[in-house]
Image (tube, rainbow, N blue to C red):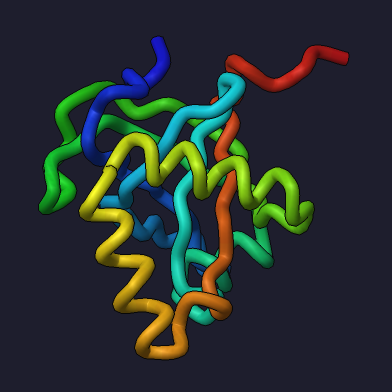
Amino acid sequence: MAVAGNARYLNLATWRRDGREVRTPVWFALLDGRYYCFSADDAGKVKRLRNSDRAAIAHCNARGGVLGAWQPARATLVDEPAREQAAYRALRAKYGWQMALLDLLARLGGRYERRAMIEIVTVDDLPQH
């Protein structure tokens, strides 16, 4: 069962090298059956994803309280500019003025260009070989 695209928050679990799980609530958008979220490119979750694409997701509240079942997933950093822009458009369409304000503040603070876009695919949705 997939996390509903209209849910407000997604809890993204990533794993440290020592095997400890780290959970982070994030805004997300669903685009072409894949989930997208963004973070600072030097954030812990981005560093962890550079080491391993292992992830899990669950619907959650703003504080990360899990509201649905965990689903195993693979999360990778988007390096294709067109895909990244499509993901931002989907996020802006979903979060409206809140995303516009966050983008503005990030641009003013010089952090906008230092973001990383994350693409998440649930294991059930991965292509079969």
